[in-house]
Amino acid sequence: MNPYYFILAVGIVAGASSALFIQASTSPPSVVVAFRLLMAALILLPVLLVALKKDGRQWSARSFWLPAVPGAAFLSLHLITWTVGVRMTSVANASLIVNLMPVAMPFAMFFVLKEKITAVEIAGSVVALVGVGVLTLGSADFSMASLKGDFVCGGSMLFAVAYLVSTRVFGRGRPVWTYVVPVYFIAGLIALGASTADWHRLTAPSSFEWLMLVCLALIPTVIGHSAMQITMLKLPSQTVSIANLGQFICAAVFAWIFFNQTPKAEFYLASPLIVIGAMIVVFGSPRRVQLELDKAPGRVA
Image (cartoon, rainbow, N blue to C red; front, side, top):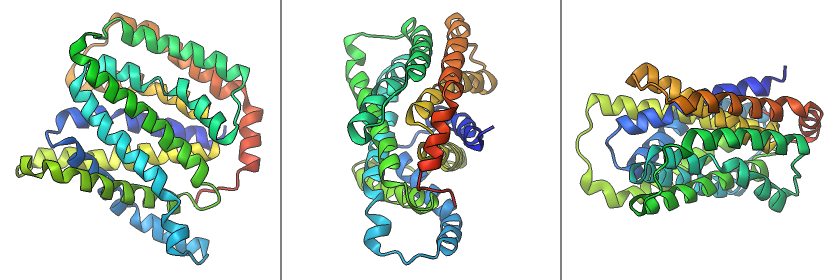
């Protein structure tokens, strides 16, 4: 089996933990995002140094930092707006909107890179998105009170698509950690600048708050987002976005284990549809995946 599918699966499980830590944290959104990104960059610094030594090329400041700026800007905007949006609307609404990413991704990839979506990917996407609709529409709140939060989550979804497309455009042709770590560092600085407006709200964090922030940096960021960026360089974009819907299932299992939240009845209908749709996309066009790997200049170091 293609090893990048395993990396994708690990990233899905790790990414699903993000909502748990965000809900448990009480720090302002921009502060949370700045901390998790800058700590992620610090954790991965030794990996970056090894990758640079192994690569051996002479990097200029422009060639090293500049390609990471677009992805970093979109990543910081995605994480800040997602954290804000989740707190402004219902979880069902936020999940519904952010998981419309597979609808927007093909259009973005075609517009930027002329990457066409196949009939198999369309079929799998439809099946998976039906599952998303079943899971969220039943309990979604479409009142005017949540409308502002819905728009924020919609913007967050578009920023996430732009962030992943930027990875495909600017991350190829260089060892992956020489792209990922600068993205985290620059995005963290952007979020840190945005957080200055919230510094007056800061209080001394408790040991539990520190634990939540460290977990956010290590699990959904270092492991989850890094896996997403690696697989965006090595697998078709729609495979990554559709498989990422599996976070629904993982998040429900985590909520059941840690918060004793029993999934609603529609979860048991929606989950098989999401899994089947993802399997159609992932395993329905193996030749395309191999062709993308064969022609990809990027490599993991």
